[in-house]
Every structure is written in structure tokens, then in C-alpha cells.
Length: 292
Image 1 (cartoon, rainbow, N blue to C red):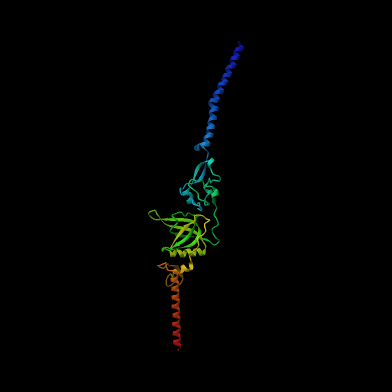
Image 2: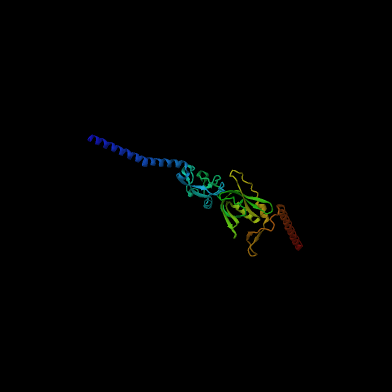
């Protein structure tokens, strides 16, 4: 009898253990494994479930042109930090704004593209030892395609269908826009780094016409020929005094017509020399008469 009770007790304990084991696997172990496996699968195929990193991405539909300097203004208007699944993060992608600030784009950065540090460079030595920063009012910046860091030709438009290249293949440092009362852009001010001769040429050219820019598509493009001739163009502008009391040349004032040809300038100079020679001869004749 005792043997039968003991046997029954063993069977009951065994059944309880089996029931507990089945309950554990059905309600704890198997659901846990299922959830973990589902999470791993979703992390591989479901974008919303993937682990993410915050990466700098180009947010402007126009993108960022090559050789653009990533100033605070450019970064604010054209770049955003967004969450991207780690499996899709590009190698060496920028995850902090400070990593790309004031860098130069070595290639065109397209809309939606991650900003990769390999596509950026530090400031290239474009400036000579005697270059200095100077601002100039510019009428056209190629439909606002010109951005800080771009390479341009600085040209003068004489308003008569002709122009000259003043400074070929120079880099734009900064751009400032002036708005009129109705909100439209009234003028642009560009900052360039120029040496003494280039500054002299641009200053004179700004008196003869208005300044414009031409944007280079690629750095490898050959520089335009400089066609602005200071010696010729300076003859089209007279130097005047501030007033009769002051003998110092004060400023350059443009004459009314800036389309005068070099031949006309030379003719005027020749006529002046003839007048001076005639005056000198008359003076000498007068002295001879007095002596007689």
C-alpha cells in the first residue's frame, strides 16, 4: 500500500514538474525567444526599428555647389542633422556640425546626401602674402548661384555691350545681400582677397561701369585672360581737386561718357601737346621782341 502511494506521489510530482516546464516554455521562454528573434529581424528589414545615428544631411533641393564654404549661413539653410539607421550611415559621415563648419566642398553635394568628411577640405591657399580683404558692390552673382568659397571671374560691364575681365579666377570670401523695402534684393556686396594692383584695377573699373561675376564650373578650368588695361582705362577719367584751396588730388570722378576709345584719348593727348608747343613758341617770340 505504501509502495503504491509513493509511486502515485512520484507520478504527481513528475506531472507537476512537466506542467511547470510546459508553462515556463509556453509563457516565458518561447515568447521571449520569439520577441527577441522578431526584434532582430525587424532591426534588419524594418527601417523604423533599426538603431539610428544622427548624421549631417544636405536638406536643400538645390544642393551645395562644389567649392562652397560651409559657413554658418550655408549650414543653417542647407544642412540638417537627421536620424539615419546605422546600417546605412556612410563611412566617415559627419555627425556634428562643428566637424564641417567653414570647410570647403570638394565636390557637388546633392539633396538628401550625407555630408562625408572626405568630400570636404580645409581652406586651400588661394591667397598671396600681399593679399588683403576688400568688399565691392556687385550687380550680378549669376542668379544667386555664386556662394562663399566659389571661384569666379570679376568683370566690369561698361553698359555699352562691352566688358573687361579685371580679376580672373579668384575666390569669393563672403557675400552680403541688401534688401529693399519690398523685400527684394537690391544689391550684393562681395568680399575678395586682392593684391595692390588688383585692388587698384577694381577700384578704377567700378567707376567706369558696374561689377559682375562669372562662375567657374570646375577648378580645373583654365583661368580667363585678364583684359582690363589700367593704363588705357585711367585716361578715360580725369582727376580733380576737392576745391580750389586744396592742391591734393582727392578722388576719381567718371566723365559722362565711358565709351571713349583709346584712339580718341591719344588724339586728345596729341592736340594738347600741340597746344602746349604753340604756347611755348609764342612765349619765346615775345621774349625775342622784348630783347630787340
